[in-house]
Length: 158
Image (cartoon, rainbow, N blue to C red; front, side, top):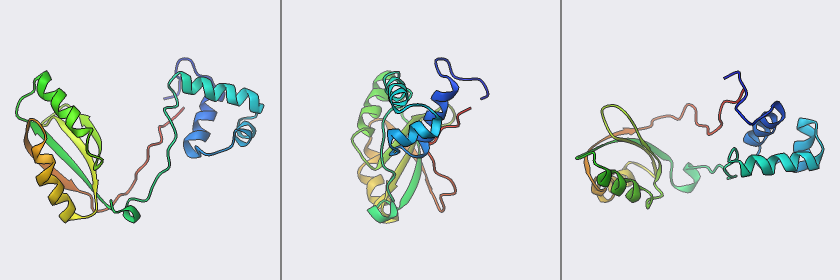
């Protein structure tokens, strides 16, 4: 990824890199980091937000300290692959905060879920009361994570 994305220059990328590593940085410190005036940086950040390059800001929380220390990936195979079943499934997964991510995938199953719960008993309860009850679910395969080796939301930027 050596080319600049359309509509961005090198300063925009520097701003995105700094914000991606410290979303709480002050505008003044950000301006210093990219060698621009505070007003120019503020205008660029506003444009990057307006144009959809910056989606928002959030704190990264410690799952173990907050009762969600067990990470589980789940393959979901639906009984039918019709627009109605897809729509019902997608709407249903939005309701449960334990389902952190849901991705439609190509391959031997339909969706890959990333879930977080307290422990294996909590996962067993969640699977029985939620996962297996989701619309259209025919089969699931569970992958409990033994160790998180790398976890980031940072995008690789040129």
